[in-house]
Length: 180
Image 1: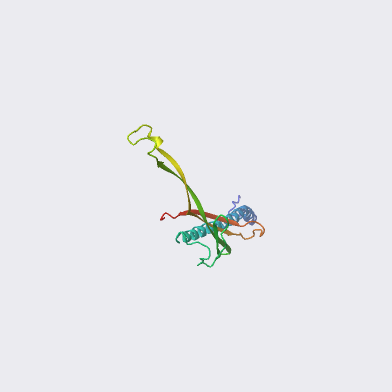
Image 2 (image 1 turned 120 degrees about the vertical axis):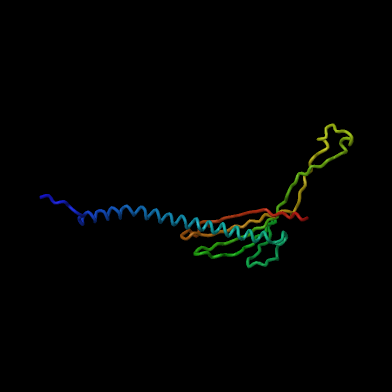
């Protein structure tokens, strides 16, 4: 009489469990590294959002608001350097377990324009010959018309070497005083 085997032996079950356990070890490693990468991306996104937020707030103030000795903020002003930069430390902000430090720099930019000028003295008004010779350009320099607002947010990842440079994100925009 021939016996037909119905079911599995304990050895077969144990072998299947060992194979599954060995197969899941690399999968768990991939998931772990993926979580670490996602956490680093989250820190960068938080830095970007803080930059956008701080820059948006700074741009709402009047053009001549950011001058020395006019500090309604909790931060501190540093003296303007030779380039007309004003550096305002906006302070630290704790989000989850990361400390973000924000700094606003406002720098006055010099603007150079080339302005076309028509000189009718070159030819008599009734002559249309060589009309291009009537026009020339003059360079004009304007001071205190444009300011560059730059926000930099810095932070350190958990486990970073304290001697290493911190991670940072910077946004910069120009603001013009066109009401002159």
